[in-house]
Length: 256
Image (cartoon, rainbow, N blue to C red; front, side, top):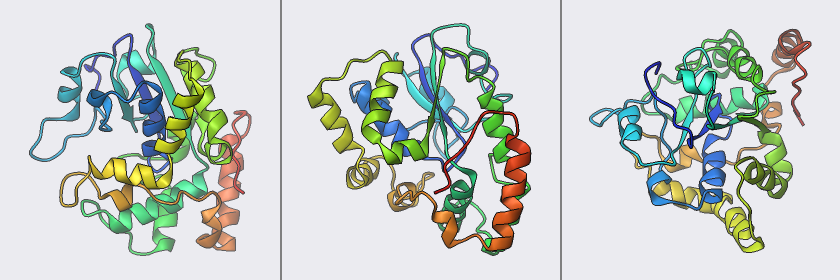
């Protein structure tokens, strides 16, 4: 990824896996006009079996490009992690307990990754930063959080989108310097509904391919679903680590 060139007019979505990436991608895609060449979510680091690596496909994609990445800033293309041009980067954040739960369901259903032995083992692995292709949640999130004062970056919380998607869409559009008419805003809100998202992704994801099925890609995305999975002991242990890692960062999450 160190040789992948970021263009001036690129729009990049950054997130730790299972933070609502597909939802954010659809929001941004519709804000940008819903262009066909940017309609399928692509991440530069992904190499689908039997196909060209996404970074090659993206190199051939005309500007402006829309893409997403789960890379830690140390692994990201230089023009993204240390921008010197006009690239716009949206960092999507989600509370770690719900990310842990969503990751668990993802791994259980994914045909390409090892399923967790149990919830308890998965919880320990996530706690210890041993997640496939993503590593430690806190290292990833806090690595990007260092860019919070850079004008190339917009940080958006998943929980805020769930509370008020209309306001979130307006904030994202303003960052992308796109004016929205009432009609366009209504179209975006409709396109980003759960049913519409599943229908849209069904056109891009097929079972048995390198990508996961639509039912796996788009879930209910509940806030505080962690309460249905974490034991009191697991929650207390996680809370302690959360306080230690987040101390002094100014970053807080809504767990309710």
